[in-house]
Image 1 (cartoon, helix red, strand yellow):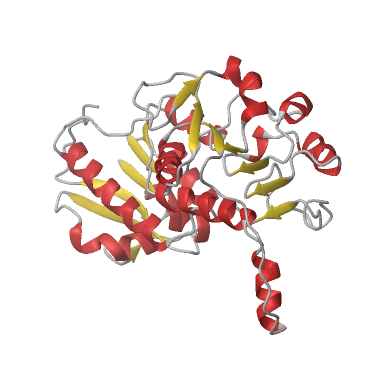
Image 2 (cartoon, rainbow, N blue to C red):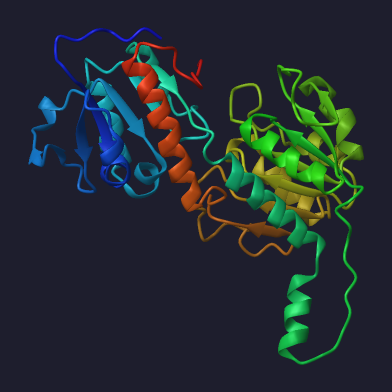
Length: 330
């Protein structure tokens, strides 16, 4: 990406206050921060500026902003910024229409793989826990019962990972270290995925009956919407564990519930849903074969810190007119 040369001596960066406080001492002198606060005010050098005067050249939409900040105001500001040329986002997916609109405005998008490590660890922890009778062990301790419980080996199992990008690759590396046979599924394999075997989506149905664990780590698009449907679930191996940390729209939730009621999959580990927050009326909350969490697989302090480093590295490239890393094509 060639940076458009500006008459001003600095470029203006829109950034959420939490991220700014962490990296303010490391920002290049060629950058003027436009800091958005929790109440959506934007300040420059401590002074509040009118919304119509907020015209950033670049923006860093990081995890702190998505989790704690005024996301809508941040994105509206980006959409209205006629000078905006580049947005780096920590979001795992770019299916929200706002990103397509930004690209239509001539904005370059880059992403961040900062959450790949904690999400891979989250998945691994959840699967190991599902193989071990932890609740029974804790109950035995509390009741002072000296009792032995068998558990299932992770070693020797086969895991099918749908979506071998940053997250899927980090997961595969960890799984292989435990003696897992990892099969990856990806629309366009690169050839360097850290798995034992790569398949394409048209081979997915043949691979499902052999997988002890099926993990969805892909972004959502038109081609894979509700890819986990009745046919998919019926093809799964009896006793298999199903994991979704990708996007809720990958799964036909009605079909999954019907499958769970019938015992297939044996367990569903779900961190994402089509409607979030998950309504209290959802049967997923109380289903005995479900372990659910609140879209928090990447909720590690390390995610924000790694994201900072990746943004600062890309910022240096932008300022020096060098190609940006992790460019997203919609």
